[in-house]
Image (tube, rainbow, N blue to C red):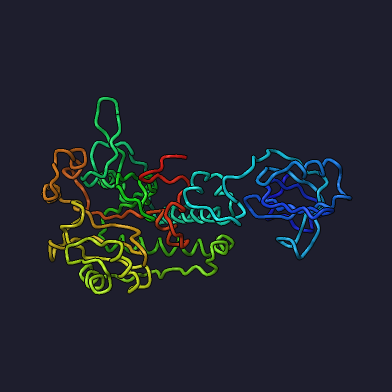
Length: 430
């Protein structure tokens, strides 16, 4: 029976492993193969005068990245990866790889991002790239575990919708029989409707679609959003929930992904504090105006340069709070003390925005007024507005970008590295 490479030790004496030929070296009377599976890499040492003839035939035919199954004797050796090697008694080629390879899985020859994404199945064989998705998986596991412990109900909302979440033109229209329909920008409207349904605490992890014509290292047109909504809560309550989640995710990754973090050059992942700084929008603008090269004034949204300038000043994860009502979505609740300010926030990494949230407007007449103030028609939101007429509790929530969280945690240079098959302005395959 095949044994995962990570579990092979000299104490086993004999073992069968299976995986891909990562590297090969032929030194005349001695040949070396590095065999890789999901759990690690193992050296297969072939003394040509001491192995069966069928092994010699196989090693002559095999190519890099071929899938093989090898059985033999396990020996301890300090020079081999993991301190052990396998001397084969059988060497079977399960699937031979064509040559040349589209990219170098051993990473001795660098590849451009487009080359890597075109051959993503090969790219993810690279241990460093596989580490990113192990970390992403652990992040999702920690997120689910945390939210279930907090008493949340997991929901699934439609991805084919009839109305924009926030209006605007950032919509992908689709042919839906004789109706006009779009791909969902966010589960926002539906998770708020679940508050009227009495569910009180809900979350969803799913795709969102934005038809933004960006072509940057931190934008995608299909992304994964972690969304929550909580009844009888305000913006402060859900900010506390979010910072607890971020702390939990980082702690879980730091504890369980040490090998993966080492591969990514992050031997000591810094776990954010449980309580993060709160920076009022007005103060954030002053920092950006002073330190950023892009002109900015009160009432402007924050651009990339401004976010970086503020992040350098803060030096850690932080919240931007007390946003002008005029630049936030219609569903953000204005402050009772000053309606020109709303109870909204963004969670920021020093490099970029990770999450956006707010206390929601649960008062029907005010919500209709705010929809109109954004130049939108309440009639287009009839299905959304109806629950607000029949007992909508106060509520708050946020959406957290999964890819941005992975990108910043793993110190990646391009958000496309954080998703298996990215969709951007130009890429719809593979």
